[in-house]
Length: 264
Image (cartoon, rainbow, N blue to C red; front, top):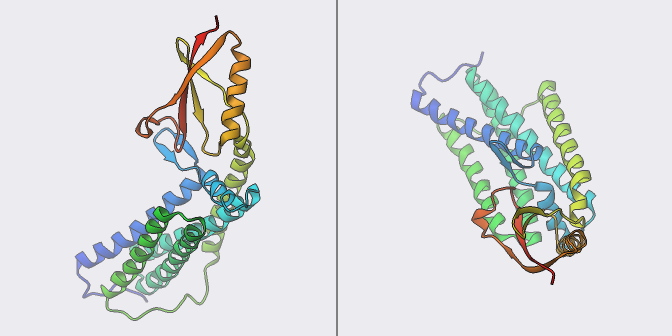
């Protein structure tokens, strides 16, 4: 029977459990970020489809299924990293050190694989800021494993001989949910690359437009064309944006204002 080492001080177990809790919550929130896009009450999620779409479009791969495929691979890595980190935490709570180390070992491997996948993409797309972030998390994951095993002075564990069917089922269910969310968002959001936007009147001769993350110059031009057609008695005086800290309505969104005057 697996039991917790009797010589392990309580502070050691607190640190170990903190490591497991951190990575479990880390991947849980990342999976939620795939399921919940945009800004909602008590949650501001990043539009990952839009982010991936812009990345791939920058290298000439602007078909929506390419971004979908990249997101599904990322989601699969994150989902199973969550399953194994959560499983390790559960085994730890039940004082099963061998299973804890085995599950956490797989979770760390998946974590390293996830950040390696992202880092390769960061190099390809030339996003140095994201590369710095993902590289930092890669090393944090590696250090987390070293600290976790050194606290009990144990040798490197082997991979589990048999992955429980329950873990596979939970991971598959989460992956199916995230993949469905990705494809649904694709169907609803891809048209934002070209569709004109509605202008909301917020004052006398002042209109606000919330620009989508996927929108480019075509959206801007079509929006102005639609606005002029809808307001034939007004002439556009000037257009301006607000500073980034004031863009609170939607995550990753640009807000611009159209000021008009009556036509003579």
